[in-house]
Amino acid sequence: MDIHGIILIVIAIVEFIFGLFLFITREKGHIIYSYSLTILGIVFWVLSNGLYRLVNTSDEALFWVNIAHLSAGFIAVSLVYFSIVFPYQKILLKLNHIIYFSAPFVILAYLLFATDTLIKSVNSDVPRSEVIGPTYTLFAIWFLIYMGWAFYNLIKKYHESVGMYRPLLRLLLIGLLVSFVMGTLFNLFLPWFGGQQYFYIGTESSIVWLAFTTYIIFRKA
Image (cartoon, rainbow, N blue to C red; front, side, top):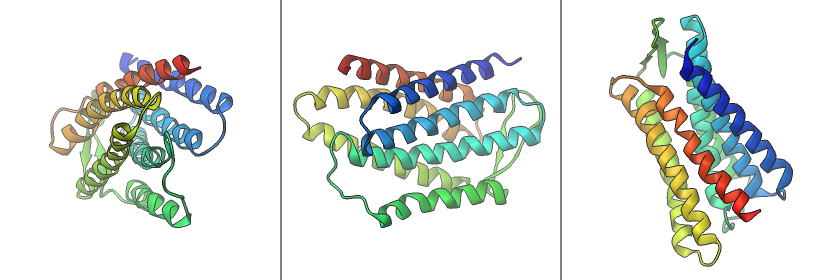
């Protein structure tokens, strides 16, 4: 039994419980909806990476690595949504915004599950590694653009903020940035450049985001 696979499953369960707690206890609105979607994306990203290490066949591993990439795209989209509405909302979200956010995600799902142009295959040997296709570069660029967009919005709001929002945004940004750097390095860049693939390191780093966010929530509770 792969220990890192088990660790990732446990982390996913803890993050799901945390997200469920927030959704139940917090006032409903764009902030809790967008953050809950971000947490859901992280949960599926961590869970799929854990199952990727635990399944027995290359076909099963390919399915879960596709789910992991789809979840990463979902995180990018939902984090942009969150960055627009937290801690305050300047833009009135309309239907065209929803279409604009979701269209690349739909294309990503098509590339992952209807073609082999993004992920061609997964090696059957353990530790496993993926063989990327020609559209992986487009996925990587799109993911980085969306994540950069989200961080730009949050950093801009941090510089504009005063009072209680400023330390809250600073802690949130630190937690997100650490997890983003680790996840991008080990789950995006190394496969992109053909390096060794240690997906579990990037995914396990999501615990940093969880720790910072938990501190923020219970400090403000």
